[in-house]
Length: 194
Image (cartoon, rainbow, N blue to C red; front, top):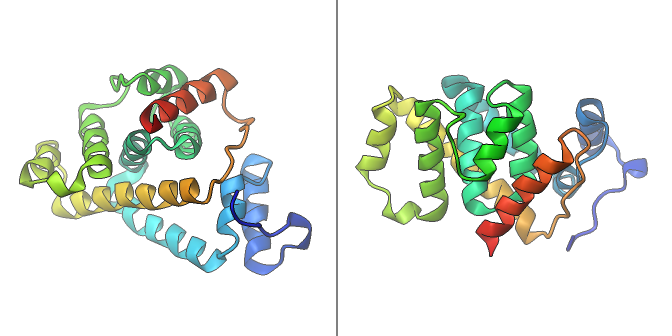
């Protein structure tokens, strides 16, 4: 990592809370949490923005947008973290996530697949997007508010993933996801980065 992060033993206030939240949720402090702890106010603002987009689209669509963007960017951090979150939330099972790592999105609903494609396009060629991209979401019943929130969800993933990459944040060995699945997601991210 190209920065020095706050040490857990000397963390206080907002930083201590960030670390405590990771420990309570996952049993360890993620390296990306430590990186964001350098500016806990920015982290809080990011989390607050995420909380403003999820209510209109729900967790399933939020995770589809997040996974689509993370795969397009080549973010192993976010593929693994949100792969695990997606499984925990019942969005997709381990077999479906393995397929997703191999570019097979069939474990997702048609609407979720449209969101994944939209998030990938936003993450790779946003300047080329047209009304047709929004129409692909509208065809699945998404409202203007939901299209904005899907766009923000994918954009937020771009912000976070690219920040982690720029800071050279190391990838954790996440004990809460099967090592073989983590390896498949990591390999998929590396194929994008190559």
